[in-house]
Length: 392
Image 1 (spheres, rainbow, N blue to C red):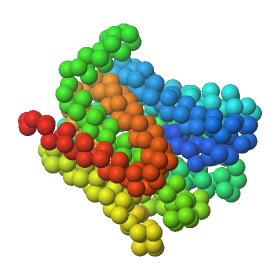
Image 2 (spheres, helix red, strand yellow):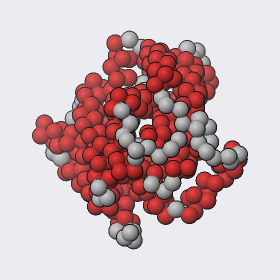
Image 3 (cartoon, helix red, strand yellow):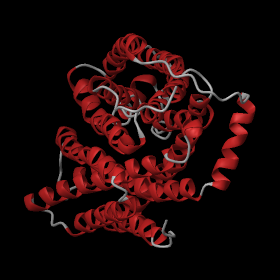
Protein backbone atom coordinates (compact mmCIF):
# COMPACT_ATOMS: atom_id res chain seq x y z
CA UNK A 1 0.00 0.00 0.00
CA UNK A 2 1.43 3.41 -1.00
CA UNK A 3 1.63 6.25 1.51
CA UNK A 4 -1.84 7.85 1.68
CA UNK A 5 -2.30 11.48 0.68
CA UNK A 6 -5.88 11.96 1.91
CA UNK A 7 -7.61 11.00 5.17
CA UNK A 8 -9.75 7.85 5.19
CA UNK A 9 -13.48 8.44 4.60
CA UNK A 10 -15.40 9.43 7.72
CA UNK A 11 -17.59 6.33 7.43
CA UNK A 12 -14.52 4.07 7.44
CA UNK A 13 -13.03 5.85 10.47
CA UNK A 14 -16.33 5.41 12.30
CA UNK A 15 -16.47 1.74 11.34
CA UNK A 16 -12.93 1.15 12.63
CA UNK A 17 -13.73 2.93 15.91
CA UNK A 18 -16.95 0.97 16.41
CA UNK A 19 -15.19 -2.28 15.51
CA UNK A 20 -12.44 -1.72 18.07
CA UNK A 21 -15.01 -0.91 20.74
CA UNK A 22 -17.16 -3.98 20.06
CA UNK A 23 -14.16 -6.32 19.93
CA UNK A 24 -12.34 -5.08 23.03
CA UNK A 25 -15.58 -5.06 25.06
CA UNK A 26 -15.44 -8.87 24.94
CA UNK A 27 -12.58 -8.72 27.45
CA UNK A 28 -14.68 -6.96 30.08
CA UNK A 29 -18.16 -8.51 29.98
CA UNK A 30 -17.19 -11.24 32.45
CA UNK A 31 -15.72 -8.91 35.08
CA UNK A 32 -18.99 -7.83 36.75
CA UNK A 33 -20.53 -11.27 36.04
CA UNK A 34 -17.78 -13.37 37.62
CA UNK A 35 -19.88 -14.11 40.71
CA UNK A 36 -22.99 -15.41 38.87
CA UNK A 37 -20.83 -17.33 36.36
CA UNK A 38 -18.85 -19.00 39.13
CA UNK A 39 -22.02 -19.92 41.01
CA UNK A 40 -23.70 -21.36 37.91
CA UNK A 41 -20.69 -23.48 36.92
CA UNK A 42 -19.69 -24.60 40.39
CA UNK A 43 -16.43 -22.66 40.67
CA UNK A 44 -15.15 -22.10 44.19
CA UNK A 45 -14.91 -18.46 45.34
CA UNK A 46 -11.13 -18.69 45.22
CA UNK A 47 -11.17 -19.93 41.62
CA UNK A 48 -13.70 -17.39 40.36
CA UNK A 49 -10.90 -14.91 39.69
CA UNK A 50 -9.65 -17.21 36.93
CA UNK A 51 -12.66 -16.14 34.84
CA UNK A 52 -11.05 -12.73 34.33
CA UNK A 53 -7.42 -13.82 34.66
CA UNK A 54 -7.48 -16.35 31.81
CA UNK A 55 -9.08 -13.82 29.45
CA UNK A 56 -6.27 -11.40 30.29
CA UNK A 57 -3.62 -14.09 29.83
CA UNK A 58 -5.04 -14.93 26.40
CA UNK A 59 -5.08 -11.26 25.43
CA UNK A 60 -1.50 -10.73 26.60
CA UNK A 61 -0.33 -13.78 24.65
CA UNK A 62 -2.18 -12.57 21.57
CA UNK A 63 -0.54 -9.14 21.76
CA UNK A 64 2.90 -10.72 21.54
CA UNK A 65 2.18 -13.69 19.26
CA UNK A 66 -0.69 -12.64 16.95
CA UNK A 67 -0.74 -8.83 16.64
CA UNK A 68 2.77 -8.78 15.05
CA UNK A 69 1.31 -10.78 12.15
CA UNK A 70 -0.14 -7.45 10.99
CA UNK A 71 3.35 -6.72 9.63
CA UNK A 72 3.35 -10.01 7.70
CA UNK A 73 -0.19 -11.02 6.66
CA UNK A 74 -2.91 -9.29 4.68
CA UNK A 75 -4.59 -7.26 7.44
CA UNK A 76 -8.24 -7.75 6.53
CA UNK A 77 -7.93 -11.54 6.50
CA UNK A 78 -6.02 -11.47 9.79
CA UNK A 79 -8.71 -9.36 11.48
CA UNK A 80 -11.50 -11.61 10.23
CA UNK A 81 -9.65 -14.71 11.38
CA UNK A 82 -9.14 -13.25 14.86
CA UNK A 83 -12.80 -12.23 15.09
CA UNK A 84 -13.68 -15.83 14.22
CA UNK A 85 -11.41 -17.02 17.04
CA UNK A 86 -13.07 -14.63 19.49
CA UNK A 87 -16.49 -15.82 18.34
CA UNK A 88 -15.56 -19.41 19.12
CA UNK A 89 -14.59 -18.28 22.61
CA UNK A 90 -17.89 -16.44 23.04
CA UNK A 91 -19.91 -19.45 21.89
CA UNK A 92 -17.99 -21.71 24.25
CA UNK A 93 -18.52 -19.30 27.15
CA UNK A 94 -22.25 -18.94 26.49
CA UNK A 95 -22.76 -22.71 26.16
CA UNK A 96 -20.43 -23.74 29.02
CA UNK A 97 -21.61 -26.51 31.32
CA UNK A 98 -18.39 -26.90 33.32
CA UNK A 99 -15.65 -24.67 34.74
CA UNK A 100 -13.02 -26.17 32.41
CA UNK A 101 -15.10 -25.41 29.32
CA UNK A 102 -15.68 -21.80 30.37
CA UNK A 103 -12.05 -21.16 31.32
CA UNK A 104 -10.77 -22.61 28.04
CA UNK A 105 -13.27 -20.40 26.19
CA UNK A 106 -12.11 -17.35 28.17
CA UNK A 107 -8.53 -18.00 27.06
CA UNK A 108 -9.65 -18.31 23.42
CA UNK A 109 -11.72 -15.14 23.72
CA UNK A 110 -8.72 -13.19 24.97
CA UNK A 111 -6.57 -14.43 22.08
CA UNK A 112 -9.12 -13.47 19.43
CA UNK A 113 -9.91 -10.06 20.91
CA UNK A 114 -6.48 -8.75 19.89
CA UNK A 115 -8.15 -8.11 16.51
CA UNK A 116 -8.75 -4.60 17.87
CA UNK A 117 -5.00 -4.07 18.16
CA UNK A 118 -4.51 -5.07 14.53
CA UNK A 119 -7.09 -2.49 13.48
CA UNK A 120 -5.38 0.42 15.27
CA UNK A 121 -2.09 0.32 13.28
CA UNK A 122 -4.19 -0.51 10.21
CA UNK A 123 -5.98 2.83 10.74
CA UNK A 124 -2.58 4.55 11.08
CA UNK A 125 -1.57 3.13 7.68
CA UNK A 126 -4.67 4.69 6.10
CA UNK A 127 -3.81 8.21 7.28
CA UNK A 128 -1.20 10.67 5.99
CA UNK A 129 1.42 11.66 8.54
CA UNK A 130 0.03 15.15 9.13
CA UNK A 131 -3.26 13.85 10.56
CA UNK A 132 -2.24 10.39 11.77
CA UNK A 133 -2.77 11.35 15.42
CA UNK A 134 -6.29 12.57 14.70
CA UNK A 135 -7.23 9.35 12.89
CA UNK A 136 -5.70 7.11 15.57
CA UNK A 137 -7.38 9.21 18.27
CA UNK A 138 -10.78 8.83 16.64
CA UNK A 139 -10.35 5.05 16.41
CA UNK A 140 -9.10 4.86 19.99
CA UNK A 141 -12.17 6.73 21.20
CA UNK A 142 -14.22 3.75 20.07
CA UNK A 143 -11.87 1.35 21.82
CA UNK A 144 -12.05 3.34 25.08
CA UNK A 145 -15.84 3.48 24.90
CA UNK A 146 -15.88 -0.29 24.48
CA UNK A 147 -13.74 -0.72 27.60
CA UNK A 148 -15.80 1.69 29.68
CA UNK A 149 -19.27 0.60 28.56
CA UNK A 150 -18.73 -3.17 28.65
CA UNK A 151 -19.06 -3.56 32.43
CA UNK A 152 -22.26 -1.56 32.96
CA UNK A 153 -23.86 -3.06 29.83
CA UNK A 154 -23.05 -6.59 31.00
CA UNK A 155 -24.46 -5.83 34.46
CA UNK A 156 -27.70 -4.48 33.00
CA UNK A 157 -28.17 -7.37 30.55
CA UNK A 158 -27.58 -9.91 33.32
CA UNK A 159 -30.01 -8.11 35.62
CA UNK A 160 -32.84 -8.44 33.12
CA UNK A 161 -31.94 -11.86 31.66
CA UNK A 162 -28.81 -13.95 32.41
CA UNK A 163 -25.07 -13.83 31.98
CA UNK A 164 -25.29 -16.30 29.09
CA UNK A 165 -27.43 -13.85 27.09
CA UNK A 166 -24.62 -11.29 27.20
CA UNK A 167 -22.25 -13.71 25.48
CA UNK A 168 -24.83 -14.78 22.88
CA UNK A 169 -25.52 -11.12 22.06
CA UNK A 170 -21.82 -10.59 21.49
CA UNK A 171 -21.67 -13.65 19.21
CA UNK A 172 -24.34 -12.01 17.04
CA UNK A 173 -22.45 -8.70 17.13
CA UNK A 174 -19.20 -10.37 16.03
CA UNK A 175 -20.94 -12.20 13.17
CA UNK A 176 -22.48 -8.98 11.88
CA UNK A 177 -19.21 -7.09 12.31
CA UNK A 178 -17.25 -9.71 10.35
CA UNK A 179 -19.68 -9.48 7.43
CA UNK A 180 -19.40 -5.68 7.34
CA UNK A 181 -15.61 -5.60 7.64
CA UNK A 182 -15.19 -8.22 4.90
CA UNK A 183 -16.97 -5.86 2.50
CA UNK A 184 -15.79 -2.46 3.76
CA UNK A 185 -12.10 -2.79 4.67
CA UNK A 186 -9.59 -2.01 1.92
CA UNK A 187 -7.00 -4.79 1.67
CA UNK A 188 -3.53 -4.09 3.00
CA UNK A 189 -0.70 -6.53 2.29
CA UNK A 190 2.62 -5.76 4.06
CA UNK A 191 5.82 -5.91 2.04
CA UNK A 192 7.76 -7.84 4.68
CA UNK A 193 9.21 -11.21 3.69
CA UNK A 194 10.24 -12.23 7.23
CA UNK A 195 9.40 -15.68 8.50
CA UNK A 196 7.14 -15.80 11.55
CA UNK A 197 9.99 -16.88 13.84
CA UNK A 198 12.18 -14.02 12.63
CA UNK A 199 9.25 -11.62 13.00
CA UNK A 200 8.93 -12.49 16.69
CA UNK A 201 12.68 -12.34 17.27
CA UNK A 202 12.81 -8.89 15.66
CA UNK A 203 10.60 -7.56 18.46
CA UNK A 204 13.48 -7.98 20.91
CA UNK A 205 15.60 -5.77 18.68
CA UNK A 206 12.84 -3.16 18.42
CA UNK A 207 12.56 -2.95 22.18
CA UNK A 208 16.32 -2.66 22.61
CA UNK A 209 16.84 -0.07 19.89
CA UNK A 210 13.88 2.25 20.44
CA UNK A 211 14.01 4.53 23.48
CA UNK A 212 10.69 6.03 22.36
CA UNK A 213 8.98 2.63 22.54
CA UNK A 214 10.47 1.83 25.93
CA UNK A 215 9.59 5.19 27.42
CA UNK A 216 6.07 5.40 26.05
CA UNK A 217 5.38 1.83 27.20
CA UNK A 218 6.59 2.56 30.74
CA UNK A 219 4.74 5.88 30.90
CA UNK A 220 1.50 4.18 30.06
CA UNK A 221 2.20 1.15 32.23
CA UNK A 222 2.06 3.58 35.16
CA UNK A 223 -1.06 5.37 33.94
CA UNK A 224 -2.90 2.21 32.96
CA UNK A 225 -1.86 0.73 36.30
CA UNK A 226 -3.49 3.71 38.01
CA UNK A 227 -6.59 3.34 35.80
CA UNK A 228 -6.87 -0.37 36.63
CA UNK A 229 -6.30 0.26 40.33
CA UNK A 230 -9.07 2.85 40.36
CA UNK A 231 -11.65 0.66 38.66
CA UNK A 232 -10.67 -2.38 40.73
CA UNK A 233 -11.10 -0.60 44.06
CA UNK A 234 -13.73 2.09 43.52
CA UNK A 235 -16.62 -0.44 43.24
CA UNK A 236 -15.52 -1.87 46.61
CA UNK A 237 -15.39 1.66 48.06
CA UNK A 238 -18.82 2.57 46.68
CA UNK A 239 -20.36 -0.65 48.02
CA UNK A 240 -18.82 -0.14 51.47
CA UNK A 241 -20.70 1.58 54.32
CA UNK A 242 -19.09 4.86 53.22
CA UNK A 243 -21.59 5.10 50.34
CA UNK A 244 -23.58 1.84 50.36
CA UNK A 245 -24.37 1.83 46.63
CA UNK A 246 -26.08 -1.15 45.00
CA UNK A 247 -24.70 -2.88 41.91
CA UNK A 248 -27.06 -0.76 39.80
CA UNK A 249 -25.71 2.41 41.39
CA UNK A 250 -22.14 1.32 40.79
CA UNK A 251 -23.00 0.61 37.13
CA UNK A 252 -24.37 4.16 36.77
CA UNK A 253 -21.19 5.52 38.36
CA UNK A 254 -19.13 3.58 35.81
CA UNK A 255 -21.15 5.15 32.99
CA UNK A 256 -20.07 8.61 34.16
CA UNK A 257 -16.45 7.66 33.56
CA UNK A 258 -17.23 7.20 29.86
CA UNK A 259 -16.92 10.98 29.50
CA UNK A 260 -13.16 10.50 29.77
CA UNK A 261 -13.14 8.89 26.31
CA UNK A 262 -13.36 12.37 24.77
CA UNK A 263 -9.63 12.63 25.51
CA UNK A 264 -8.56 10.35 22.66
CA UNK A 265 -9.56 12.49 19.65
CA UNK A 266 -8.35 15.63 21.46
CA UNK A 267 -4.99 14.02 22.22
CA UNK A 268 -4.64 12.88 18.62
CA UNK A 269 -5.11 16.40 17.30
CA UNK A 270 -2.69 17.83 19.86
CA UNK A 271 -0.09 15.21 18.90
CA UNK A 272 -0.40 16.17 15.23
CA UNK A 273 0.60 19.72 16.21
CA UNK A 274 3.83 18.41 17.71
CA UNK A 275 2.84 18.95 21.36
CA UNK A 276 3.29 15.39 22.56
CA UNK A 277 5.70 16.26 25.42
CA UNK A 278 3.59 18.92 27.18
CA UNK A 279 0.40 16.98 26.51
CA UNK A 280 1.93 13.88 28.11
CA UNK A 281 2.78 15.85 31.23
CA UNK A 282 -0.72 17.30 31.33
CA UNK A 283 -2.27 13.82 31.06
CA UNK A 284 -0.12 12.55 33.93
CA UNK A 285 -0.94 15.61 36.06
CA UNK A 286 -4.67 15.19 35.43
CA UNK A 287 -4.53 11.53 36.49
CA UNK A 288 -2.53 12.29 39.64
CA UNK A 289 -4.71 15.26 40.55
CA UNK A 290 -7.85 13.18 40.08
CA UNK A 291 -6.56 10.57 42.54
CA UNK A 292 -5.74 13.31 45.06
CA UNK A 293 -9.27 14.63 44.69
CA UNK A 294 -10.66 11.13 45.18
CA UNK A 295 -8.49 10.70 48.27
CA UNK A 296 -9.93 13.80 49.94
CA UNK A 297 -13.66 13.46 49.18
CA UNK A 298 -16.09 13.43 52.14
CA UNK A 299 -18.62 10.62 52.53
CA UNK A 300 -21.55 12.79 51.42
CA UNK A 301 -23.58 13.43 48.29
CA UNK A 302 -21.06 16.14 47.42
CA UNK A 303 -18.29 13.60 47.94
CA UNK A 304 -19.95 11.20 45.51
CA UNK A 305 -20.11 13.98 42.93
CA UNK A 306 -16.43 14.79 43.42
CA UNK A 307 -15.56 11.08 43.18
CA UNK A 308 -17.43 10.98 39.86
CA UNK A 309 -15.38 13.95 38.66
CA UNK A 310 -12.22 12.12 39.73
CA UNK A 311 -13.29 9.04 37.76
CA UNK A 312 -13.68 11.17 34.63
CA UNK A 313 -10.23 12.68 35.24
CA UNK A 314 -8.53 9.31 35.71
CA UNK A 315 -10.13 8.01 32.51
CA UNK A 316 -9.29 11.23 30.65
CA UNK A 317 -5.61 11.17 31.65
CA UNK A 318 -5.18 7.49 30.81
CA UNK A 319 -6.99 7.72 27.46
CA UNK A 320 -5.04 10.82 26.40
CA UNK A 321 -1.68 9.30 27.27
CA UNK A 322 -2.56 6.09 25.41
CA UNK A 323 -3.24 7.99 22.19
CA UNK A 324 -0.16 10.22 22.57
CA UNK A 325 1.97 7.10 22.99
CA UNK A 326 0.55 5.43 19.90
CA UNK A 327 1.08 8.55 17.83
CA UNK A 328 4.73 8.58 18.92
CA UNK A 329 5.48 4.90 18.28
CA UNK A 330 3.64 4.78 14.94
CA UNK A 331 6.05 7.45 13.68
CA UNK A 332 8.94 4.98 14.12
CA UNK A 333 8.21 3.13 10.88
CA UNK A 334 5.28 1.90 8.82
CA UNK A 335 6.75 -1.57 8.22
CA UNK A 336 6.83 -2.42 11.93
CA UNK A 337 3.73 -0.75 13.33
CA UNK A 338 1.95 -3.97 14.27
CA UNK A 339 4.99 -5.22 16.23
CA UNK A 340 5.43 -1.82 17.88
CA UNK A 341 1.77 -1.76 18.88
CA UNK A 342 1.91 -5.34 20.19
CA UNK A 343 4.92 -4.55 22.38
CA UNK A 344 3.46 -1.25 23.58
CA UNK A 345 0.13 -2.82 24.50
CA UNK A 346 1.68 -5.90 26.14
CA UNK A 347 3.96 -3.83 28.38
CA UNK A 348 1.34 -1.44 29.62
CA UNK A 349 -1.23 -4.23 29.90
CA UNK A 350 1.18 -5.86 32.36
CA UNK A 351 1.23 -2.56 34.22
CA UNK A 352 -2.55 -2.69 34.38
CA UNK A 353 -2.44 -6.18 35.87
CA UNK A 354 0.01 -4.97 38.53
CA UNK A 355 -2.23 -1.99 39.25
CA UNK A 356 -5.27 -4.22 39.75
CA UNK A 357 -3.33 -6.51 42.09
CA UNK A 358 -1.94 -3.54 44.04
CA UNK A 359 -5.40 -2.06 44.32
CA UNK A 360 -6.94 -5.21 45.74
CA UNK A 361 -4.10 -5.59 48.25
CA UNK A 362 -4.14 -1.91 49.25
CA UNK A 363 -7.90 -1.80 49.78
CA UNK A 364 -7.74 -4.92 51.96
CA UNK A 365 -4.86 -3.49 54.01
CA UNK A 366 -5.70 0.18 54.31
CA UNK A 367 -9.00 0.83 52.57
CA UNK A 368 -9.59 3.59 50.07
CA UNK A 369 -7.03 5.88 51.72
CA UNK A 370 -4.08 3.58 50.95
CA UNK A 371 -5.41 2.60 47.50
CA UNK A 372 -5.82 6.23 46.42
CA UNK A 373 -2.32 7.16 47.66
CA UNK A 374 -0.82 4.39 45.52
CA UNK A 375 -3.01 5.51 42.62
CA UNK A 376 -1.60 9.02 42.99
CA UNK A 377 1.97 7.74 43.13
CA UNK A 378 1.82 5.87 39.81
CA UNK A 379 1.27 8.87 37.48
CA UNK A 380 3.67 10.93 39.64
CA UNK A 381 6.32 8.26 39.04
CA UNK A 382 5.62 8.43 35.29
CA UNK A 383 5.85 12.25 35.42
CA UNK A 384 9.23 12.09 37.18
CA UNK A 385 10.55 9.66 34.56
CA UNK A 386 9.17 11.79 31.71
CA UNK A 387 11.09 14.79 33.05
CA UNK A 388 14.33 12.92 32.25
CA UNK A 389 13.38 12.63 28.56
CA UNK A 390 15.82 14.39 26.25
CA UNK A 391 14.42 17.03 23.91
CA UNK A 392 14.26 16.42 20.16
